[in-house]
Image 1 (cartoon, rainbow, N blue to C red):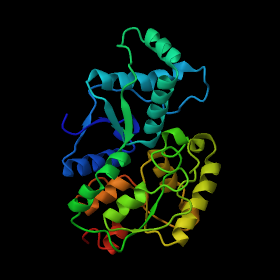
Image 2 (spheres, rainbow, N blue to C red; image 1 turned 60 degrees about the horizontal axis):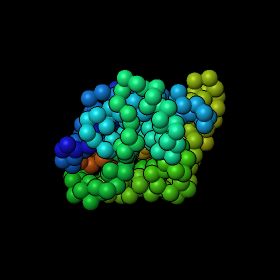
Image 3 (tube, rainbow, N blue to C red; image 1 turned 90 degrees about the horizontal axis):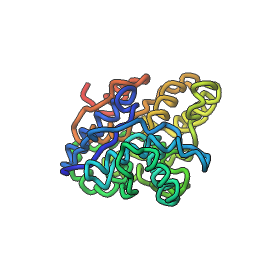
Length: 283
């Protein structure tokens, strides 16, 4: 395959289409396109924490079977939650062969999963191609102060973390490669409140106020991330902070540095005004 087999998940096709659009454009520009899987299922959204709960592993394993059926041994995700769920389910089945046997017996109409598909987040791919990213830059984002924000799913638990759990640097390295001024964000690995937004939005509002206020005090022009749920929470619940900081997917910033305008149209805090003021977009 020319490029990378890509698992989109549900949110990238709806609320987070900006992320998919910009990621597709960036990878196409790097001559390493994301090729969507022929067939895929919802990842299940939440990884089961119960050791005897094999049923919640069905959705992610069926998706990995789809990748296996396409003859691929690697699959790339964009959504942090999808990455976390697929990666943890895959690891569990490798470490618990009896559960894998049970899973294969249950999915009797599907081929047996052999456990040989590797799950990657797009940031891991971009880290390996950072020199290519730097070479492709047409407009350095100098003058744009960016606060990287990782949240939870890329770094926890440690066995699936894409970087050091306490001091990650993938985003910082990529932002530096496109010429942005990168804040040393002390809040970058703290939780945004996650799914509490459904039944306890007050928790999310408090968490977002703490996070955004700190980044705003440090002079952030924009917050960069990769989790659609984090993006929604930070974008929607910062009203009470006194700040209006655009919350963009990192791939949207990379696309801008490449001279592409991909995404940028589904954000509550419109990034256009700020990006024009900083000279990133034409007025």
